[in-house]
Length: 421
Ligand code: FES
Ligand code: FE
Image (cartoon, rainbow, N blue to C red; front, side, top):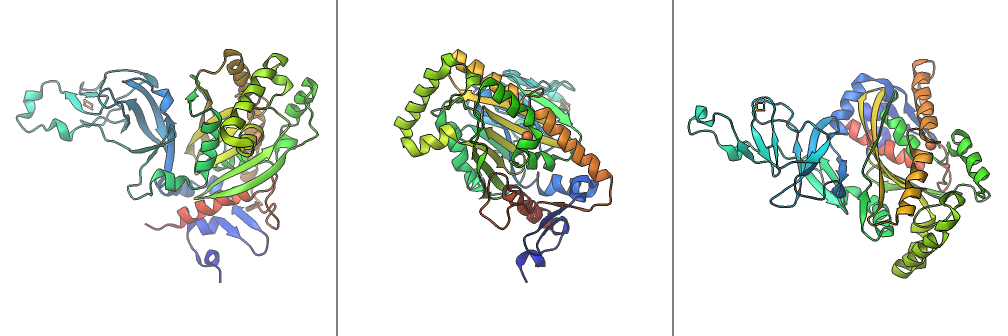
């Protein structure tokens, strides 16, 4: 008997591998309140979760506020230490949210309820009417609650699991793909100010699948391909590549595609006048990293999943997308654009155009993708069919249109949902 067949629990009830080349996911994994509650504890409570990028808070006191795994947090650059501090966004007095705006710069964070005040290192520095506490108010024990935080090459993650492995170990094979992103920009990566924020009515795992799904590109995004043809793009190379399980639930879809890349593969969308600049970037990559790695960084596209809810699309632009489920059938998404610091203004402009044209909330891809995901969720409500089929490509080396990368996600999800502690 296989290990899979012996396992029991909510995960194994919902993800079944075999017999033969079959991989199925029970649709209640996307609809059940009970599964959703279990996920908040067993997935979002037991993984490293992306919070933001260090470049978003370059100066002392800079902060951003975000929900992570359903919990309000904020990240602030400490004025004393210069460190990236991540705090639970709750006052140590009686609970109110301390940081009440999404972004800014501040020396202190004052709770609006009774005005306790904390500095950017989380220390309690002000208590109105402190003499009412006698000598027993220990300010040092009443600083803001810190979330366990680690960064990998500027990407800041937090976890609520005290026992989890360190971040580099957790990232496993995904580290190399983060390295490609950072190295292709010579280590000087910044998040372009501004966000795309949108929500949709479907289960969050459908967006995980969709973000690394090569199978839907030709059918769902037919309009985009027609647009590229109209611009003079040669579609003959098609979308060809591989999908890989990177360990710990992480996975990548890596492929060559007809569209260009700002670093560094020119296409008509970028304009004739950018041809030389992009060629120069390509030559620089080859000088620094050798032809083989330069080719991977410049010409291959990657849709990277860092389990459970971070997507880095290193495609016609580099986007970072994370999402928070708020119900079994509701997700809130935030996306950012990454770019090299000091990029030439015209290249920056084209990068942003390229990002918004395909991946923006009103671009060629996102509305069609969300329509597909909401359509799946509506289909689940119809009943009569209990299982989704995710078997594509099980009998061969996984190709770009196969589903091995999704199976990597679901296998990890199954193990986590089976956990009893
Ligand atoms: Fe923050 Fe009272 S709850 S000061
Ligand atoms: Fe898509």
